[in-house]
Image (cartoon, rainbow, N blue to C red):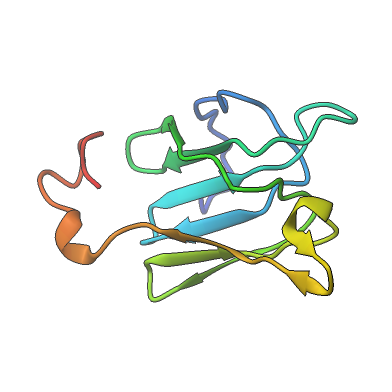
Length: 119
């Protein structure tokens, strides 16, 4: 993390380091790392979420197909759409599948906003 004065602070490391993974910011607090490569040739469906307020990574449901070197888009601070990119698992004939994650309604987020249980 880098603050406004350009000071650098270390944050908790990801559980499974990855690269070329689409990222999404939900509710200005949660950063989702969706799929990506965990090694030179090993793509993954695994997904993780980083809580920027509690400095904590936690696992979330895996993607239905791999997502590598592609994009994720957040709509209405709730739905995250993951584009298929060049992923062959997300293709059927001439069709491409877009994955969608529902992060829940605002009413699902309750309790102390500074706790790890929030959301």
